[in-house]
Image (spheres, one colour):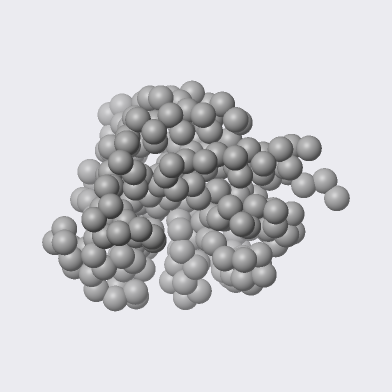
Amino acid sequence: MTMTIKVGAQLHPQTHRLADLRAAWREAEQLGVDSLWVWDHFFPPLYGEPTDPHFEGWTLLSAMAADTERASVGMLVSCVSYRNLDLLAHMAMTVDHLSNGRLVLGLGSGWMERDYLEYGYEFGTVRSRALAMRAAIPVIRTRLALLVPQAIGPVPILIGGVGPTITLPTVAAHAEAWNASGPPEVFAAINERLNECCAEIGRDPATIERTVAIRDEQIDMWQDYAEAGADHLIVMVPSPYDLGPLQHLLEMVHA
C-alpha cells in the first residue's frame, strides 16, 4: 500500500542559544519538512529544570516566518488563555504576512499550571479551559475577517487536544486540522472519536488534517500512524537540535 504523509518538526524553544534554534529551523527546511513549529509556554513544560532558559513562542514564530521560505509555520499550540483574542488574531495576520501566507494557527486550551499562575491568568478547570477555547474560535475568525490588510494565506486553524466531549466536537465544528499524540493504537481510537463527531454534524472527516506529535523513538512506527489515520507526523526536537532522526523519517517516507 502506498502511503502519503507529511513530515514536520517542532523545535523546542528551551535552549541557551537562540542562534542554534534559528539554525535548526533553517536546516530542517533544507531537509524538506512540510511544517515547522514551536510551542507556547513560558517555562520548561516537559523536561529539564524549572530554571532552564526558555524563549517566548510568538516572537520566535515571527523570526521563523522571516527565516524560512517554503514550510508552513505555526505554534503547536497557542493557548487561547494567554492573550486577548483580537490581539492574537492580529498577531496571526502579521506572522502570516511575514511568512507570505504559510501560517497555520494552532490553538489549544492550555494545561501547564505554572504558565497560568506566574503570569497572572486564571487556571480554572480542564472543562472551563476547553469551553474557553471553543468560545474563542468565532472571536478570532471574526477579527481575522475585519483586519486590514487581510491575511495572505488561508490561516487554517489547527486545534490540539483529545477531550472527547468538548475538544473533539470543537475540532469537528471549527478546525481545518487537529493535533494529538500517543502510540498508534491510542491515536487510532481518538481519531475514530473525531470521525464520530464529524458524522454527528454532517462534516466530511477528510476535510480535517490529522497531525500527530511523535518522539524520536516513535519514528519507525510511521506506517502504523498512517494506518491509524495520521496525515502529518511532527517530530519533537529538543535542544541541541539533533535532526538526524527527522532526516531518517523523511528518507523513509519518501523512499
